[in-house]
Image (tube, rainbow, N blue to C red; front, top):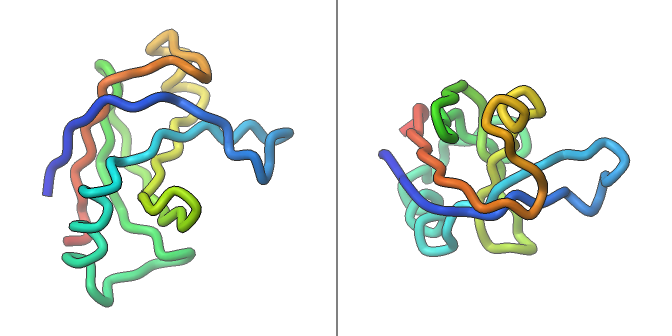
Length: 100
């Protein structure tokens, strides 16, 4: 499954000192992913993905966020730096689910 969307970068409020920067997948897409994933679960309910932001591609995981009713994708510092992105910026995101 491949998903493309625009999203704003935000910091996980539970650990602001660690500056976990994330983007949220669309709510409807996340609901579809939950249905497709069924019992496929790794730690914390994560699913492996290949993510692309701008020209940067990497392998990571998406995690369910019950507060947003969506999966969230961590965007590591090296990617943010390479793409000149900061918290609050909106960017194009491509996510390919590897576990489904």
